[in-house]
Amino acid sequence: MNDFTTPDKIAAYVGGGLIVLGVVGIGLLEIVAGSPHPVTAEGQIEHTALVPLAIRSYIILLGLLTWAGYAVYKVVATTPGTEPA
Image (cartoon, rainbow, N blue to C red; front, top):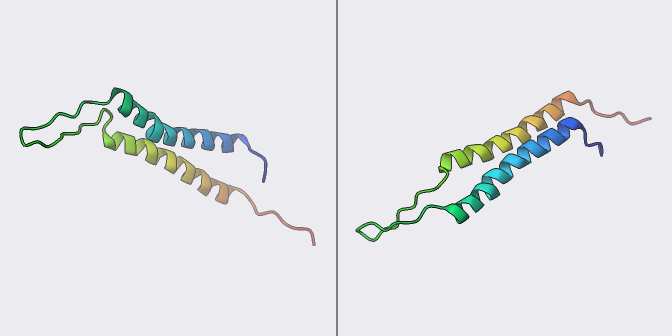
């Protein structure tokens, strides 16, 4: 079970990369180049995100679905090992 095969690498790098992009990458982008927070006449701060929240959420969700799909594949495609008697 210590073998890290090509499908393992693909699932780990693609799923993990999407999650890191959605959380860390876009988060840093928002900090560095984020939009200013104007104040309305009533004194409320209006926050508009540089990258819409729906897009950021879908990137993270796609990474999680990649991991979930690979987990289902791993359960279905592998056969349990047999122990010698």
